[in-house]
Structures are given as C-alpha cells and as structure tokens.
Image 1 (tube, helix red, strand yellow):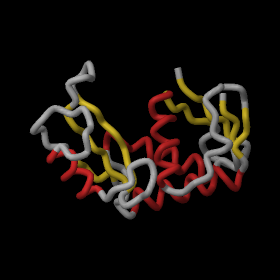
Image 2: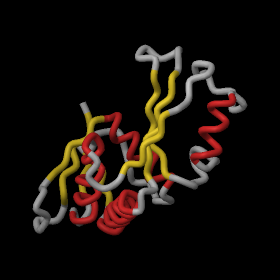
Image 3: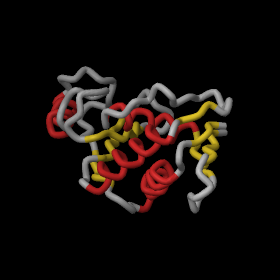
Amino acid sequence: MGMDLIALSENTAMGGYHVNFTGWGQLGDLFVELGCDVSSMTSDNDGAVVDATTATAWGTELGRGLTAGLIYKLKYSKAACDSGWVTEIHVEDTQSPVPLSTLNFINLLFDGDLKLPITPGARPDMLAITDGVDTYAWLSEVAAFFANSGGFEQW
C-alpha cells in the first residue's frame, strides 16, 4: 500500500513515483519542518492534485535540505516498540514538530529530561542524510520527481 504519484507534465522523464505510506508520512513531516505548504497533500488515493507550483517548491526545499545536510535520521531505543527502536527523520533547526536543535534534542533524550518513553541510558544515534545516501536515496529521487513533475495526481 502507498501513494502512486502521477506526473501532470509529459516532459518529465519519470511519469510516476510510488511512495509507501510510511514514506509519505515522513515526507509530510519533512515538508512541515521545511516550511512547505502541505494543504494539498492527501492520504485518500483519490486522484487529488498537487499543483506545479507546490510540487516544485517541495522538490526544491527537499533537494536543498539534502544538499545542505540539514536532514538527519534519529534512531533511539524505545522498549514500548515491537522492534525496540524508533527511527525518525527531521530537519535541523526547525520549529515543527521538534522545537529543538539536534544537539539539544539528543542531550534531552540522553539525560531523560524530555520525558519521552525511551530506554533509560540509551544514547540516540544520529546520521546526516545527504543527497544519495543509500537507504535514503529515495528522498533524492522523489525530490527530482516533485521538481520536474509539473504537478501530480495522488492515487
């Protein structure tokens, strides 16, 4: 399951792109942190359109975040999760949804002052995600799709 994105421009080399629902949610969070308008983003698979201006802005901001090394993966131990781990993607120095810089966030997690249900004493792992990093190469791909799609339908 996921979201099939169908480009409106016939000039794009990639006519469509598929994002699973976890990835779609992560993109939504990243766009909020990057200051993008997400009002046309849906999860209904109903063909709703994201216009060319919005799609281009999403691609530009996501690409800028990757190129500048502003996007990072935060992984921390959490006993309440089946896997024992939580992995989140964030943008450095943004106000939403995490109103802290990465260093402050990690220190609060480690010291336990943030009151999150994490495993005591487990230090979070932080990895900068840059353009083309293996596991997150899809972020570069979808940024290029957004930038070149001419807008797209969400199915």
